Image (cartoon, rainbow, N blue to C red; front, side):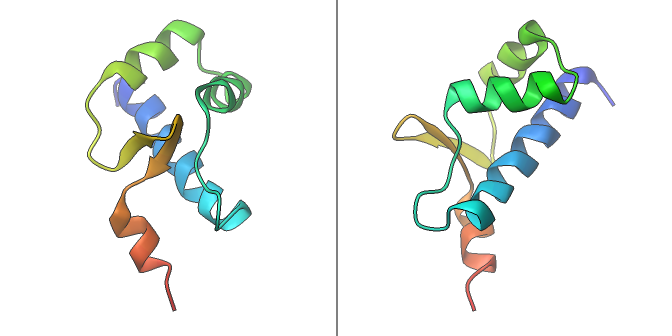
Length: 77
């Protein structure tokens, strides 16, 4: 797997986890993404490159990276 794909997979997982942590205010700020991804062992340039790529499953709304709507709706009872 290419490094950018690894970072994107991490970004997707982190955004999905944010729904469980804060269901009414989910998503991660760019600073939170950088902090989490660097702690996971990714370099700052790798993270920025991955964030610049188009993503179908993570979007940026209100300054936060959030999972796609299909993730939110699949979590509903």
